[in-house]
Length: 252
Length: 80
Image (cartoon, each protein chain N blue to C red):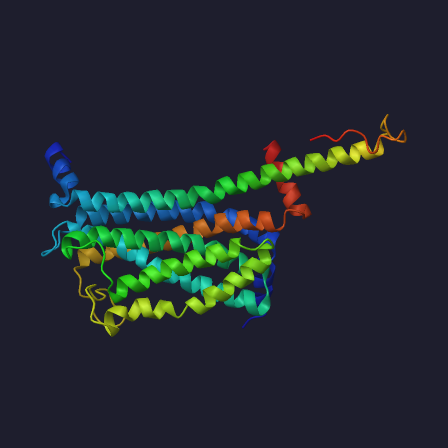
């Protein structure tokens, strides 16, 4: 690896540098997320044809599936950040792990609620203790557990490290959620979009879905920047760079 | 888009009561997630400014002689 990459990463992991970097990245990420989200909504709600079996009810897919992907993706990021935080004790890794938890919980909650609204007509029930649904509910509890554990310590850094440990253990649930529709005979349908092999879904439905996936990823970046900035201010409130921000904002 | 097609769009083929609440939850949850850290950041800075103002006032009092100091009245009146 080129020498400047670790150097650059090392610089970026300094709280004041990351605070400024996140401040620049945030507006671009949210603007692009909203733009792509609107395009995806137009494609999914207006342009895409109704499903031949489910009619227009399937249109919940355009938020349900991207949210479900995000619920797993964010857990993966949180797990990696938690690992880095525990091994190398980098403050920024703790911040990223703890800032990811509420966003992941939000997407998991959306996944469960939209899935429920979809299932009530298609399966005839709001909820069933099926492998996919149950493991996704466990994922929500893992996120909530991480958040609760983090806040139950007076010392924020100690709380972050303890919660990071839980986040790391909970990562075994991620493949369980993903493969639950393969390993068990479930009511939930299998994947229709596959990385390997042909997808079994109409092209008019694929592009809004993938666009929404990119939009939700960008939203995560933007929200993570927001949360990391607030957390860094709280963690470093005694430092000069935070005092300077506090003084400058009162004038500005 | 005319009124009839808008109406059929909103009806979602009879599934409006399931599709629109799903989208509503999506946007409301993400809006809350978006606003919460911004309010928190502003509150943190406000609290920090208040703390800095208190520290500044304490330093000023320590340097200027209090009329009550040295007469058995302790440190002088404490400001809230």
